[in-house]
Image 1 (tube, rainbow over the protein chains, first blue to last red):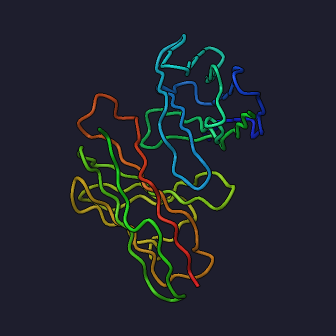
Image 2: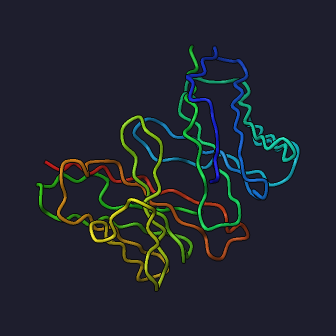
Length: 110
Length: 118
């Protein structure tokens, strides 16, 4: 049974701070890792993908992957109230579908 | 690029009727599309994998005769909720995988369809 675990939150951070979102996965052969952002009442939006160990930066977002620890994280720098959403971690293990975590709710207060 | 549309965005139907939801990949071809359902404040639940030109693969517990999936072209998959009941009211979201893309694992989501059965 492939599992992706996330803390449900909410994670509360003040505006301008760094938000750190974490995800662990169970399948060691996982190949691709994604972060989706989902606003309330909307569908998920792909914001980051990462495939190899290390960091990947895109604007205010940094994804970090550690395959040995089966751990992937998302850092959001200079958090804004508009970043308030649920962040879904998704893992692809070579089978047809992605396995999603249940998501972490992020609240950024002005 | 990688835009997925869904139609309708909202639909209200009476109990016992059927509703069809369309999912289209607008700027890429998708041999594989996925249908999800999400209840309020709950996580995404994969219902089925839609394969162009072949039968859909349903997840355990999803009634294939109630949720009919057709994937007749490389850019269109449809989900028909048959004999809808109030408990079928939910947010239905499709996603698609770019068949010609370099990353076959990446999925792009449509905007979702909110179904209310009265």
